[in-house]
Image (cartoon, rainbow, N blue to C red; front, top):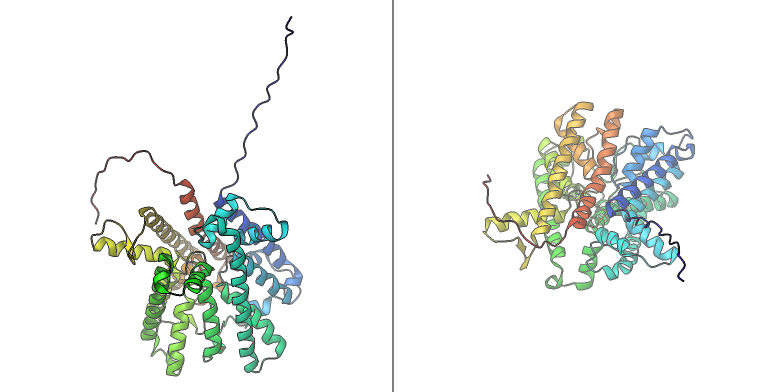
Length: 457
């Protein structure tokens, strides 16, 4: 005789999907900004030992984490040594990339193997095509960062010593500015919102700073490809495009700035010829995301400021410490325009064809950035007012995480500061998270819709 049995069927467990890469990036940077804000509010972070108001703290923390450089209080005089160290730590973590840094700490300190999602996150930030080598690449990025920053700190410290600084000040200043320059942060401890104006006639200091932020703005993937392959013919297509476009922007920007400001006594016109050339090149390079200046940008002509706005809009290379829409995106748009004008069926450069989907993503990033720039500019016009060119300069500088200003930032009202904080964060996270989101939605299709054309132009 078969006895009846009771069976209990447990309800299926809900499978928790891991957070998207975009969400991880946004939440990670937000957490770092919150922690940095709390630290900067402490009396120990200010030079006079008083509490810093929350808006100033969150503005500075956001600017440091997003490696921007815009400040509402003078970094040298408002913050204490503890505050400087906190800002430097935020710059380093933000520049190296929260996702790259967290995966590196996970690998070195915890010792567990990274998952596929972690590897995809790091691949997006470093531009590495091989998922299997991400862990090794993260370690190489750390070594690359350390070598660049230590070398820069030594060169700057020696240069400062040569100008009569005491050894302690020369060393600490060299370290701070080397890290800030490599990460394209734009923070300085020279005081008076002057940035590097006292070194306007020092090609050694300006040259060292420029090399640091140019190398940081190219990123490990580009520099590593050049170091390992050494021959132009063997370089990856992306490396060739980024290098060619970067040289074109650097030389072209310097030539236009020199042409427009050569006779301006308030800027280049008051310098010897050699220093005019040096400073024209320096400001052409720094506008691409570094945020340092040796001249008073408020005294530049409007035409020169427009050129700087265009350079800030473009920014540096993908996977680097720079901001903007990235040189890669700008180059793809140029290539697409040239290929279309030549009647080619697809975008191509250096004998290689570029997939349509990559061009579409570049268009999406550029259009999103333009739309955001218009929104921020409109917001500044409503909350701050003033010359349109100054407002446009401030808007693009915040969105492109550059940190240059014509003098508007320290005088921003509270609504303007809040708007710039949002612009800095969105500008840092927007392009990359958009690319991650678009890549995550990419999927093969089993069929294609019928073709129908439409008019343009």
